[in-house]
Image 1 (cartoon, rainbow, N blue to C red):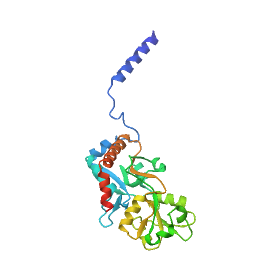
Image 2: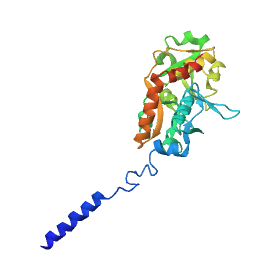
Image 3: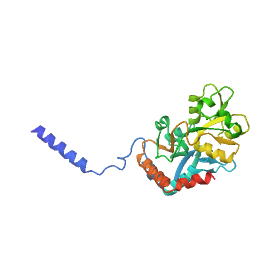
Image 4: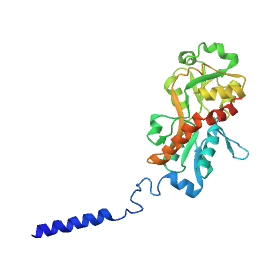
Length: 271
């Protein structure tokens, strides 16, 4: 009899619990104590954007007034506008970018960011904005010295390969260059001038960057940008664990890529 009474009480308690309204915090996760960025960004009116500012045509910071320009800067402004917010750009470096996004120092990381597996362990990536891959850029006057522009043509004693630290360019260069001299140059905004001046011979970077740099430095020629050494995709980095926000960014990117918006921004830089 006592057992039956106990079961009856338990059933009543379960019924009351099931009928009770859910707590406002019930759907919140430990890594998202304030909900999704999809909701908080419009409420705050600010989209915090991390970008390096040193990788034209995707992101470029004006040293005089600190303003940002670039394909992905324009995209970030559009994304913020779509969320009824204003973009707030925060300077970062290639070595820190994904860590800054993972630590929630910014809501999104943009600026020609290549998807890599190590980065994907720290952040989530949006749908890709474009395909890319590593290819060499050299002085046009020395182009014939590099034959077909293979790694074997480049990795020779007497050749200086220059690279900016902390990103996929350095990773690729160190993995493939053994006999040539590797020289680190900390400022990606001036690195191509080092090749023009003859203080370095080659840089291996994304084909999109070599094409852009060859338009503003006619002394430089991109080698086989249509057939890069590697395959990569560029995308935007978002914090892990916020599927709602990432899915929104996916839809934003998908529309911009397919309605011509992204191509229009790129064309403005490739003139």
